Length: 321
Image (cartoon, rainbow, N blue to C red; front, side):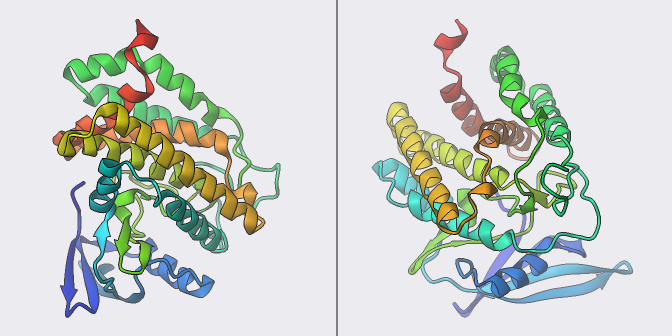
């Protein structure tokens, strides 16, 4: 996936990520970094500084300075190696990392006002949450946009499965009762570095492809984006490494299952199994694939093969004969 920012390694000690273009404040990253430090979450590049400046009369975030992680490679490299080799030993580590991240972010205080988008106020008592209609509307809009932007044979194939996709999204019309926390918002394998001492999650900028995304959402949304990114890795391995499709699909299933098992176990260990509503994972996965198609249509046409390959895996031809 193409990057939207520009990072510079300085003396193999720090990384300066320049935001291109600079982003008006408030920006999520400085607040999230500060909270993760306070919460004792260390599986990230150490945050050192945020550089700001006044542009056109308004304060902007210009750059973020973090620690340099030796021998770091992002998941679009190291995870594709795992897919090509058919190995899934990394997956439990990713599940644990994601769970620890959510446990830390779940203690980040909510804003003093109700939240847009999904509707529920995360401070509201259990049972007082509004239905998940906001999530359902957002997902349906993503499907409609994906259908409109995906042309040619892919578009025809997608249109023939629109009914199946909508049935998958139907779960989002039910009330969302799981806690809403500050999520990562763009949690895919490309945001997870493998370095000499393990794994680290980076880039707390939110999802660049979703305008005005609510930062407080069910943790299942991050989980779904992470699991779908494993599916995308499988597609990359097929296209770029010549991995047989059946072996790549099998690898993705095993990696996904191991990741989710470790995630559940970690939440249970810490007394917070309530953070994950598993009924939300599949509809959020479907929405994410729609967003991948939108991203491909608007920014990176060559990426279309990955979400289309995943959807072909999920909805095989024999089920629509």
